[in-house]
Length: 127
Image (cartoon, rainbow, N blue to C red; front, side):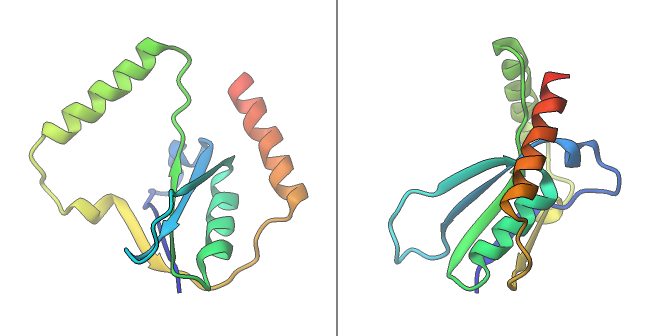
């Protein structure tokens, strides 16, 4: 049975509206292959697809948001925020922001649903 790791978001988090990617890799050390990164997807689609893929296999899926940034300076700003956060003393456990769970097969979105999601993502990014 596979494992799914994602952010544990508060209700109405704006992060949920970002495009999301799925990174799928081996759950153990016995397999040596490069992880596969797929996306972008809407969050619900990414979670459902990841769940469908890893549920019956020894795979790990990490579902995380993309941070679309329009230029190099905005990317540098994100890097600085990440560095600053890493330097702050930890007040809580590292796993407080992530949810890890064993997954069971569920209904994956259809190709048409995923394509409709892509259209919504493109419209948000272009807007």
